[in-house]
Length: 307
Image (tube, rainbow, N blue to C red; front, side, top):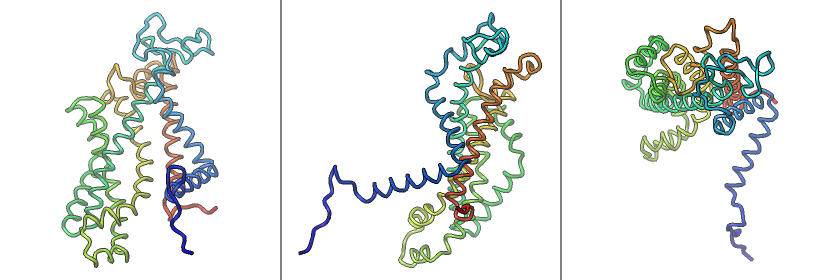
């Protein structure tokens, strides 16, 4: 007797959710087997949770000035107090609260700039690799021109002309970092468009836009994710560098680069003012790099490590 299809409903899980859960479990097991990936994921998770719950974790207003408590040392040093357990800066502002709120700026700029540069670079790379000919030549020459310009000098000029600010900083960093995406995506597209499934789609009359979205784009996502993860670390350092030079985030907003700039003249006498934000930048960048290395090993078939 012929049986009907298996019942589906709210209490019965379909094959797609089961497949997604199984894929998630496999990725989690791979992550836990990798010491580098696990450390990177833990560090990134800590920074993200710190930024998300900054109002709960910070014990003071990060912009509150207290001249009577300026340059207080951490609580484990002589003269330190539990009220400011990481000490205070040259204006009496609580170091811990400023570091906690500074994580928000670093993550917003890092992720926002990568989204901007990734969107620009991926679009130009897809168009350049798929259509080729004079379109490819024009895009590649523009990319060569951007590579010839010193990145930090270009950003300094733009920030000096437009003026500092969070939105401006994200846009400037995003616009200057699209070349690496374009080159990687273009190389992937040149390889994928010669495969049989793309030629078959062209043979049945599929439009170019559908071929790019349905057949080529899903096959370059792994490379795109890998390069995006690595660029987040680079972007965080760029933001800190611009803020250190006084052309990034302006007070009362808090950034780790600005904290470094404030503390550079007190390194000899009050080392904690510059050391703690520097450690925050280092830990965050290392976490992103470790996690990016693991993603590269997992998602890029050419870079997968042997079990």
